[in-house]
Amino acid sequence: MGYKKTILNRLLDKYERSRAYLDGGTARRIMLRLCSGDMPEYNLEDTAVRELVNSTVQALADSGIVKFEWMRFERGNIIDRVWLCLDRIENAYREAGRVPKKEKADRVLDEIRAYLPGITQPWIESFLKEAVEGIDAKKSLTPYFPADTDIALAVLKALRAIDGMDGEECPERVFSIRVFGDSKYFERNVKKRVAGIIRQYLVAERDLIERPSDDEMLAQVGIVKAFEQVEFCGDISGRLYGKPVDFSLFRHGTVLPSRTVKGLEIEGMGRVDRVLFIENKTNYMDYISKGKGRDELVIFHGGFYSPVKGEFFAKVHAAGQRAGAKFYHWGDIDIGGFRMFKRLKENIIPSLRPYLMDKEAFLSKKNYWLPFGGKYQKALESMLCDKGYSEFHDVIETMLRAGARLEQEAFL
Image (cartoon, rainbow, N blue to C red):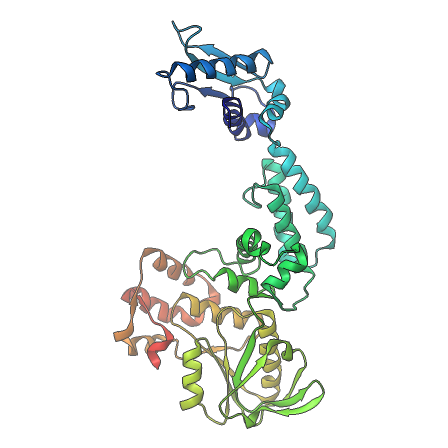
């Protein structure tokens, strides 16, 4: 990049961060101090470089784009300051070969406003409305979208496609081909940004402590690495695509492809009077092989469940309510385990109770405690002020005194 573009781009960067850009004010000059660090390329010891920069600035001044001042007692030799002529700002952009930031923002704003009336999912609508207000006020795409207009529009396109998925599962690369015509475009350019939007606006997960992964976030809207499976063990009977089915025959558990969940109707639960969700796969396998009773239905919960898993959990809850069953969740005695419990309780099973996640369970496995630091402590303390975690306030206070958490595997 030549000196002309270097000078203009640095001036335009300053302009786009200034009050003049936001409200048209002109009280302060948009200026570079060439000898004070704003342009380290201006090497006063190199005569050829100094003269080339001087001639470049002079040419820009002759065209009315900038004005400048020579250093005192160094007229014709060393330039002290260069500033933009704001009445020629369009010329500056043109000479720099640069698209104005406002023009980029307006292009994306137009697309958002065109999409908004057709959006059906509240979290996407909430994000887009907030983005419209923020972009309009700041005349900038960030922090809502990438500064690169093409990528910003790709994020918007992905959100629109997610809005139309209606809870269906789609492998990530298939989604990418459908939306962008390239199996890896989504992963390379859009995935992290979309996952961040889901994390903040759908899951409302803003803390950096035990933050769910991007893949877990995408699974919330049906974009998965591969089609999911649901795993359970217990006396469920009903119909699968209209035909009778009895899962009580599978004494060591059953695995169903996620797509099969759509065709499952649960009509009975045998002698089941207790349904237990288990977060960790190893604990789930150990429990069904050693501890499960005939009156229990045990379900592998995993991490943040997807819409399809949620649909299965909802079907189990409806059948369990008819049978008078009680519902329990067993997870890590830590922030992640508490959040998974809260989400399942608030979204699907209001009567959910914790299992082996209380003060006594925590104290019983002192040899397996894992220490935590200051940020983790603050996140736990915030849970004490949230009624949604009231079941865990007693154990959280104990954890804070101990400065430790406990993973579920300690009970194996």
